[in-house]
Length: 186
Image (tube, rainbow, N blue to C red; front, side):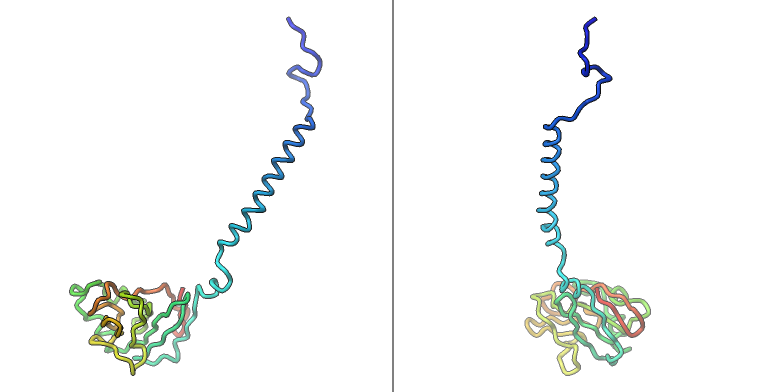
């Protein structure tokens, strides 16, 4: 049997050395330094206050008469809000969906119970122009919706492409009714 010197056996207490302390302090300082560098970098990726302010837009619907439309800004892009008449709703519902380039029934483009309101992007899907037709004095094309004079794209009263080079319907942004007279886009 060999003798184990004092302080080196299995029951011996391990004493930290100065080297252990310096290693722990260096690792802690490196972790804190890395956090100090990474934190502002990650923080700079968050959206700024002006972008957050534009993320949602509330629109008061009371001044919009049937047959009228307005253009509002949401996230720096124009959005059409149209108060459709009974005739415009009927035209949109009875349109032959199967013959359309981008088929979509009117019921998929409006909210249930609020069929008189159409909210759609105001950017032509062809080259990004803003079609006319929100004001009653502007040309609305053969289908009573919007007309993009740049290249002749025509949209119906549901914002669906019906004629011209545009490849798709006007997109529907996310929106909800806060009340019967107010919507929130975004």
